[in-house]
Amino acid sequence: MNKLARLFDYQKYESNSELAEVIRDVESRYPAKRQALSDDELEFVAAATGQTDNIYLHDDYNKRQRDRRPKT
Amino acid sequence: MSGALSKEEIYLQYKDKVFAYIRNHVNSPEDAEDLCADVFVKIYQKLDTYDSSKASISTWIYSVTSNTVIDFYRTNHIHSEIPEDLTDERSTVEEEVLSQENLSLLAKALKNLPQEQMDIIVLRYYKGYTLQEVAEIMHLSYGVTKLRHREALGRLNEMLAS
Image 1 (cartoon, rainbow over the protein chains, first blue to last red):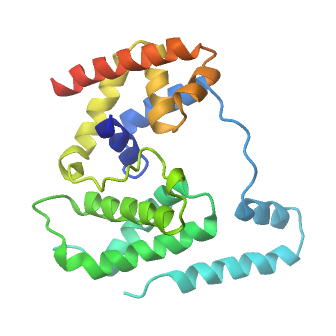
Image 2: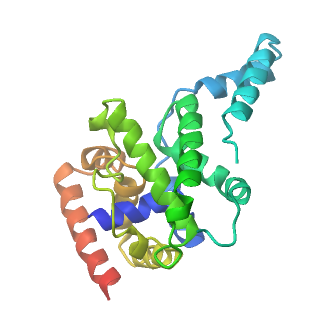
């Protein structure tokens, strides 16, 4: 049912509060499977535990984001 | 033309929404950042073709974003991993279908389903699990899950059509 799939995909972009409530309700009954941390999340964890090398990583990350911002 | 919004305003208003959507579909944060930048380049390039009588600017940006994610999977030859909610067909009906109003209608319709059916639909279409995975998560047999799924689709069709 393509329409249904598209509506749920659209919800990931244009969150509707009523539908978000239904989804939260369902999610609360089925806790997500544990997932591996992404590289970004690992950087934040490392920064939080005081590893200074990762501060530079974090700066690079921010710079990369600024550089990638399209010029208007 | 977009009318009211400048490129800068579009970027500021939609960057978080676009990035969050892409992150939802793409595992790598770096790929997501690249795609987000691609989306805004496309938006700026195509802004002159945007027709406000056909769709809101938000829905139009969603279409550009979703097509960019599909292209990412295609270009990287990971066609089989295109999420099922992002089908190959670049939807032409979405301008009519995709609206806050229809999301509210879907929410109301889901609330009218038996809980088990509502759960199956959300796990299948929002969380993207296969029916086999849904069956495992809900501790149901595959046969029962398939049956309830079909029943739920039938009821939703009726409710959303009326």
